[in-house]
Image 1 (cartoon, rainbow, N blue to C red):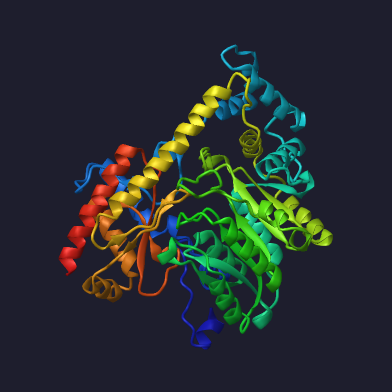
Image 2 (image 1 turned 90 degrees about the vertical axis):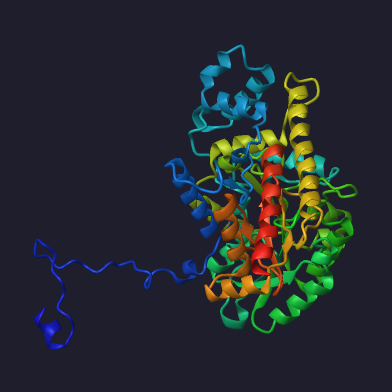
Length: 501
């Protein structure tokens, strides 16, 4: 203390017991700086305020609304979508095998549960699995991919089970990122994008290369825009990967086969590693649209491409008709990966031991559902069809109602679970938002939340062209609640525009 005083430093304050408190090792100034650059709009400040409002309502505080409707995230079951009975029956049997003696469970569910348990250490889902995933599940995933892709071969050794698709995407980005300065890895991502990508690149200290989807052409992907983004990026980084989300999040577009072929040719010509995020592959609603996997198209283009283009594709149990987000099940398939890199990938996934085994079991049921002639088949098809049909109906309803509002324009929701309408924000509101240090669409969405209880995500959290404003909303709420939500959005936008005109 004496030396500190002699140097003119403030004397350290003592606690009540006379002990000088030790300075914290980890502070905002000494923490990993890349973490501070991470942003994830889907669970950002709007959602935090929505949670506060829910608490205030529960405590009896008066609001201009009776409930908070969260349309910010693709959490299907939280929005009221019902689980598939067969999936839950098998998972219940696996979790509590005593139920295998219960006659109320169908025999095909019991058979599937026994097979999964026999693949687990000690016949228990509570045991670790192999780091790459349970062998029998990876075999089932490979057979599923072969069926989906019309017989294109799939090697189970190229399948890695993951903790949701996000885990696989992050793992692949870790392998790709290297270099410093102008040699630092650049990764091309679509704008608008799912914020996982920008957050992951920020955490890894990689360079984000934006390419813009064409809103005027239903959020289509233009090869000339890819070329522009790549050429500009090569001045300041080393572009190594191209990420595609198909069907799109947040934009809901479904890529045509021709577009996918063009992307593959572009990746081959420019020496880019392709990452295909295909978690919404069953969510296709629009007439004339069809899901084409990147792998299938790649192999149908012949050995010039199928033997050389490096591809990782991702799928999940969280979306489609399943909506089982909380189980964190998923897989990635790797194509044409260097053998030495593949060994490093296997080492990397071994560090986190294994993906959640219940999620692996669920993934197995998704890729190997009840078959014709089995007791659960008819009910499975009925539930699956009902869920996807309801989503298709809600996609159309969302587009129709939003397009009746002056100052809102919404492209067709061809697939996935979201609409990403463009909104016109009056100049007066833009100025007020700017004066408050907020993005104009954040200002708009926060006002909507406070006045209507509707929780949406501002477009700025996903990226958008300068001077344009959007919000993302999910189409997941039940039809009656979605109708209320859309009518409230309509009323709010009209009131907001009038107030700031």
